[in-house]
Image 1 (cartoon, rainbow, N blue to C red):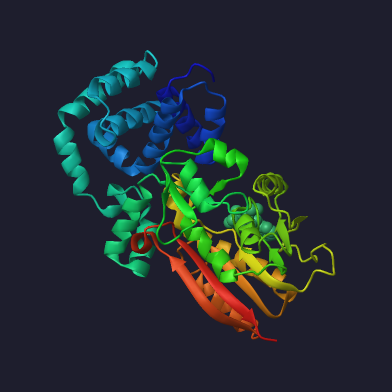
Image 2: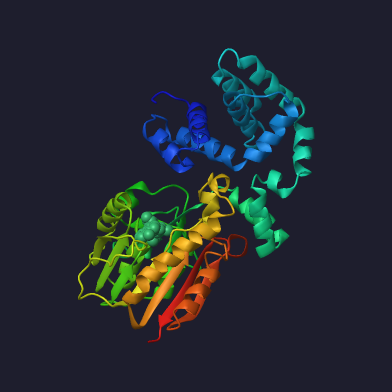
Length: 417
Ligand SMILES: C[S@@+](CC[C@H](N)C(=O)[O-])C[C@H]1O[C@@H](n2cnc3c(N)ncnc32)[C@H](O)[C@@H]1O
């Protein structure tokens, strides 16, 4: 993979993504790991790959207007790459056309060259044509998502959400106060800006590689804090973090507990548990014990029986991730409407598997990074109807178009008997 240009890398990643076997994030991470690109070129390759995925329908609209005959996958990808640079990234025209044509094989080269040059001549007309399309095409989101969001949030919020999903996310980090105070962190990172609503979160202009390696901070959106703050664990308590990996919330819980008490951090995925272990160690968590467990298996959790029942349980379930779409460029193309019910069934099974471990008077927080009622309010209503001893005490949600952070949901349930 060495000696590839940023454009070559983005194109190769796009071609692999089309095979449907791997997610965009893992493809890009693997390609970047084995490349010798400079930091700016890595950023450019990332921008190209994710930008094309975020604008697929729009790019294909333009390609269809420029060329009605059939195109093979490779030529289509080259045209997507060229048009993304020319129309959406505003790359200098000569570089965009020359470098893209250069990537085509000898047979496709004349066609790619002709289509891109024609696109430049017709740019105003094509941009105007795009503005007349419906939101699904204009913003490159599947129609079923537009329909459900319009029903749930209204047309204006849906348009704002689509626009949000198409903008790359800023870098946010939570300062890990198990290692360093926020003031000290800020004095060491002059480019870090403290968030007024979340005093232990900062906005950064680049990844703080050394601080991450020291465990001084953890890359995390501020919307993830709500579940931990709702759980509100105290030092000395017994806490179950049921779906813990890779550990962003476990570390925050340990911080709130001042590293006193015990956290049983579970996950069903062994690979992710390894990452969890590394993260907890690097970030200075001393009170977590790891457990490999699948809550849908029906078998009891194997742990020190003296620990349960738990004072508090956090269930940060797997979900559709629609609240974090701006961080998952290809998610919209992988989701189908039936997924929301499929994932709801799993969320309910995980919840049912944990409830008996909560002590009377204990607190359970259920959380997702989804903005879909099927995975949030509906799950909580079903569970509180099924277990009459669970009382809904509070719900907190974050909606990108309303709150300016990723979408998330957290509900606090109290066991009354
Ligand atoms: C949203 S992620 C958790 C993120 C984590 N709480 C954090 O803050 O870093 C959901 C996790 O649930 C785990 N998971 C999925 N199904 C599970 C199950 N049936 N039992 C236990 N864990 C499960 C996944 O492996 C994944 O690591």
